[in-house]
Every structure is written in structure tokens, then in C-alpha cells.
Image (cartoon, rainbow, N blue to C red; front, top):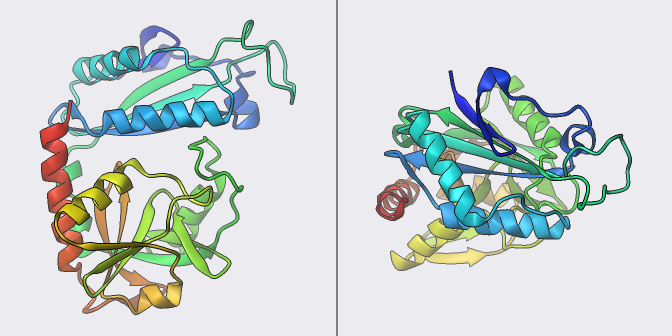
Length: 286
């Protein structure tokens, strides 16, 4: 049985409880992060911690712990749950006031809620999907306009994944005003020649921690990077495509809306970026 962390306590998962008045439950008023674990160590923890603080700040929400305390909680959960490869999910909400109200509760009288739990995923770094590639469909992006804040408002991305599943595919890329924004839970990229193309940072997409690392590694490997919007049609004509996220690292995409990219197998640049990312991330893991 897993040990989880809830509001300062390490508990068996069956004993963990959160109030029905919690703002995340009633209003989706919460933020989250997911940090991968490889070899029992945390990948890109500092980046996730910085983005967490940014998300909290954008929502005028307080953190119940310091970054140092958060690191120790992560490490303790990895230790007690004996996680070698997997993920740690973290959620902070505006807390549980005495009753439901649209108005934010007074932070002096309503403490934030913090929850963390582990997910063991043996073979996370050696996913078979990385060797065969993903197939995606395109869907209209119908999310709210502050996608740069990593909130728990994940209903439409969840619907998008179910649309892909119903179509017999792996995931969906969301499209707004003719251009791809991102995947349901990942950043999206195409490769034309020796150039990697991905949408630039704005309120339209999540500022991916894995995205930042992969683009840095790409430039260090002398690959060209162009940050701009691209269309589904442009993507279908690309040499390669891939996604990045904390849980998939770098994952090749081999089909978009039924059109195979190249010869329909993962391309060399995505494979090389995955190799570099995993190698460098393991070195820097804490």
C-alpha cells in the first residue's frame, strides 16, 4: 500500500482524506506538477518547483511549504514507496473554507491543501512506444485562455484523449485559429530538414519544463530551433514530429490525422533528442 502526503502527514493511501468543500473539488481552484523519477532520483525538480511558484503566483495562491520542504517530501515519498522509475504527483489548492462560495476564502483563516502521491512506472525510460511512435488526431482547442498556468482544469484534455482513443489513436493535438497549440498533456514539435519547429511561449500553451530542457539540449547539439506556430497540414508534410512531457520525455509521432510522416517510423532527430535528454537528465537528477 502506498504512503501519500496530505497536509503535513504521511498516511496510508486508504486513510487519506480531503474535505468536500475543497476548492479544487468545487471550483478546479488548484495547481499541480508531475515530477518523474529515474533510478530513484528526481528529474528536473528545480524546474517544476519554479513553475509551481509561478502558477501559484498567477492565481494569488499561497504555498503551504517552502521549496526545500517540498524537495524533502518528494524524496521521502520516493524512499518509503521504493520508487525506482515513476512519477510524483503534487497538487496544491486554495483550501477548504467552511462553505462553497465563488469568492476566494481569506488565506488567513483557510489554509491551502497540499497532496502528493507516487506512481510507480517500471520501464518508464524504456517505453516501447518510443520505438514505434505515436499516432495523433487533431481536435479544436476549447480550453480556457490561461493555459500557461498549470491548473487542475483538465476536463477538455481528458476529453481529447478519449476522442483519440475512440479513433484508435494514441493522443490528440489541439488546434486554434488554424495552428497547433499543443497536445492534450504535452508540447508538440515538427522537424523539417535540420530545423525543429515548436510554438513559442505565451498564455496559449503550458511552459513545459521538459520542453525547456529539450530545446536547450537541441541547440547544444547544433540543431536549429524555430519557435512559431505551425498548421496540421505543415505537420503532415514534416520529416518528423514528436512531443515532450515529464512523463513521456521525448516521444516520436509517426502519424497525424491518418497521414504517415516520412516512412511511418520514428525519425533520427526525435530518437537522438530522447537519448540526450535521458542521459543528461539522469546526470542532473537529485
